[in-house]
Length: 185
Length: 51
Image (cartoon, rainbow over all chains, first blue to last red; front, side, top):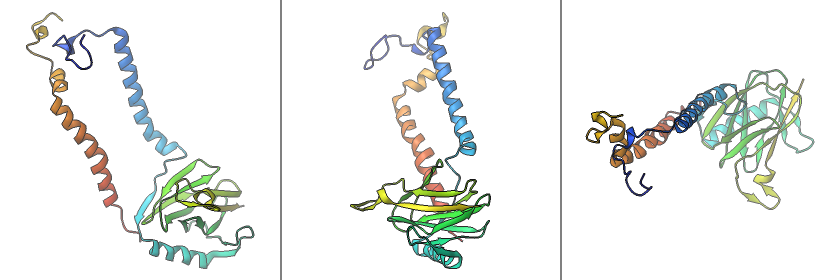
């Protein structure tokens, strides 16, 4: 039979007969690999993660202008809990969310059942966008603007957690980086 | 299995390929380089600028 570091003793090894159980094992393992490979495509369209984002190249400065313009136009109040502006953009519109060390800005107030084009980018380093408790999680980069269409289907207060370690220490940093989305009827 | 091909003088095409260590090395480098690195860079280069 040979060993792993010597050539096979049978020089015509391809034609060496294989045990029936080994053939079954190879066939089943290969069939499962192909099935999972095809199902990756299925999960991409049907699963709650791996969203297809439109992506655009941008700069933090250009993106900040869009965030600030939207914030200025649609601020409805200051949030009692955090003191940050709460922005209520009209349904169907483009909503601009910024990730930065170490917060998300602004706080959004959305309507249940309405569609929004959520744009997100980072001002400094790589962050994560993880909408809790939903199973949504993707990376957010400076210089890239990603657009995801979302329709909130539940009212309440939802947290955005950062899933990519982005530094900080002591009282403030990645571990305390949270954003907020309020969803109303 | 007892035909002239099993004499070892005319190995199977698959065996010739798999026994060719240089071909295996080239494929091992080229396949991930093209499908992963080059395709990935092409995707990133083609990201449009934000309107």
